[in-house]
Image (cartoon, rainbow, N blue to C red; front, side, top):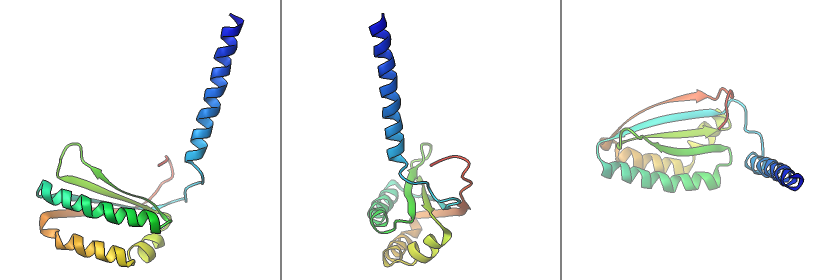
Amino acid sequence: MRSALALVATGAVFGALLMRASTSSRRVQEPPRNAFVLCVTLQFKSERARDAFKSLFAGFAAWVRANEPATLSYDVLQSDKDALKVTIVERYATRGDYADVHRTSDEFLAFRAQLKSMEADYTMTGDSYLASDLGFV
């Protein structure tokens, strides 16, 4: 009985340490306060157009990840209710990181031009926000 309790206690301590280590490795640094966030929804007219957009976005998102350290996240969410609806969620450390860095890069301008060439295939709505920092991402 004593060895079983010791084993359970050792397992609990090990589990707590493992959880603490995995949590601390995910949160290497504190995120900036009041991040600037864009949410842009695109409603496509066809799966072909949606898939072409996703392919275009994936290539640009890889470039953003490699070259824009102040872009905290840059992703596409696929609606689970409407196969032709996606939402782009962009998080930047500051509004300036969006306006002065991301939006002025040659790569963004090329991405935007390609997206504009597809505009007959979708409608777009969007808004910008400042993170409340009440929760976590």
